[in-house]
Image 1: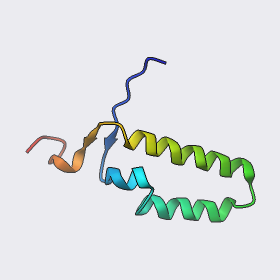
Image 2: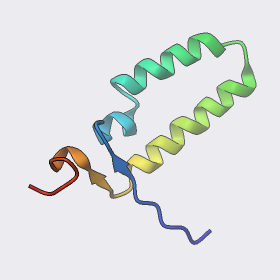
Image 3: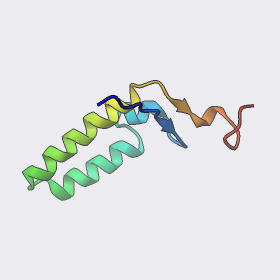
Length: 72
């Protein structure tokens, strides 16, 4: 679709997004627990997981490396 995507990871470790670990794992576990009987929403969850993995695999900015949005 000829779009440019620039991921910005603010106050989150990109590897937590990629691997759905840390707070992402907790959120997905809670959502799965609530939706475990809804096949449509579980399919949507799998698409979200893949989209987050794909986004985290792109080159982007990790704002933990800058102070107040400005380079050191």
